[in-house]
Length: 333
Image (cartoon, rainbow, N blue to C red; front, side):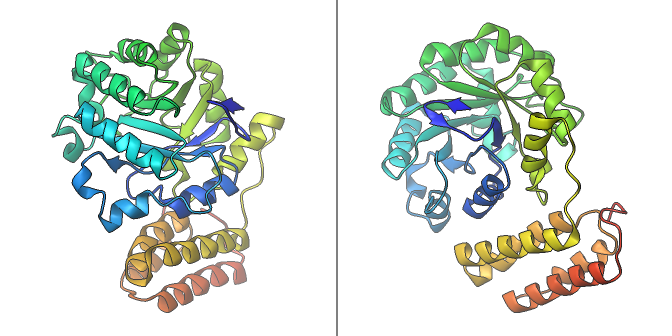
């Protein structure tokens, strides 16, 4: 797929997720089949540029191109500054967040809250595009503010007119948060109204669902977020299904163990021991969700404080599963 001047292996996008899509996770998803991955959100507040958290979020060392950084905020000039800041540090595509429904973001009129103010949306997009004229700007947003105000078509038109090069739409309104089911009619409608690429997002959990959404919306790609937590091989499965129509067999315990071990090593190296162990807990929980005995394992895992103990417990759990030839994902653990 040619996307904004970059050649991607496919049209599968890793959605930006705060606290999840750090460099180790992005690299892993790309390795296992994703065509492109968007960084977790970086604030436009210049006071935070020097923080360790912001520096980590802007760290793309060794990452497969293109480097996509997502910025968030509500002030056009601050967002323009943030865009320039990230491009100077290697960003090759800058994405603007108007999709996050979190209260801490929306309470300051950022994220999906911005969809209420179309005039401000235009000012923000125009300011960012003007600030980085040689770097593609993209936009992620939702179908609307609430179900009575689905203004995604209007936002998409503003984006295209402002010089935004591609858009991604989550099939829920801001009021929906992550409840209910994503709807794709609005995304399909937007696709007929704009000439720039449209990426569909929301509830894409299986290869079959990915194909359905692509066919139904005629979108140029699909963006996958929560479904890839603990299942980064989902991109490989979707890619294979879209190419062949065949469903790949589920990964074995041995392969899951190998993938998780490599992911943990990257997390420890990226964050250091103290933070790395804490960050690793949620990933271990996601990798083991649904496996027999995982609930007890996760409870014990959350008490462990160092790398060695965490790795030993992980090895013991997976080797035990393999030794007893237990079925994968046999219970909603």
